[in-house]
Image 1 (tube, rainbow, N blue to C red):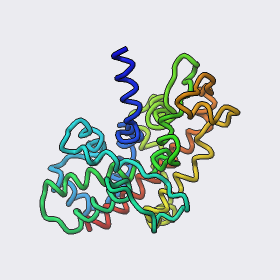
Image 2: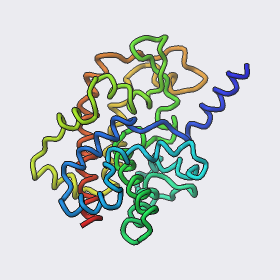
Image 3: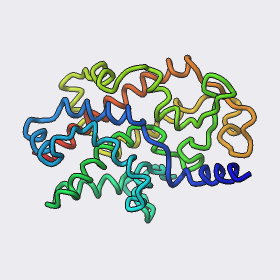
Length: 270
């Protein structure tokens, strides 16, 4: 009974705490790709700021500090609820902040602050949030907590998993690659493609993520039931076919995030 109450409390708090976007591997892939496309001056300035720590190492810091009460207010920066009217530029952001306001705050610090500690943390936050912005379920619909309420079977009905976690880490881990291997396999773009990616603003990244929802959610006659906490007896089972169909989306979003992160850092550290 005590365990049941504890688990219920954890699920109830998911909206505030969320799960790790892309997981460690995905964030490190994004950071590794970005590192490969830094201008020499930007790479030098970043190395001086971080004491030589890599962007890949910094990329998971915002997840690692979740257990630190001093950073409790950062929890809501990992995601954003898509506005009903679709107008990101005029939406009202929650008082506790979200992905857009967290990104803007980190960018502001890197542009204007001279405090090394604040700049290091802002860099780690920015690296992480660029990855989060490209994970489709971190631009959520306001109805199912970024698919944290959506319970599916992972290769069997007995192995239940949140759809959000499948997109954060399960599909990436199923590839059996290191983050450096996956970054190397993905990092092939023409100069024209890189320019096009890096000129798109944050709002466009978020629109792209939200537009992918139709592909992300399994097509099933029980869609409404498997995303409802009180009605999850019939759940879709996802396996190799789902991975095969959605792997290209994951790979594209990781590549886009990496290229765009490089563009942001080259601008901020020129």
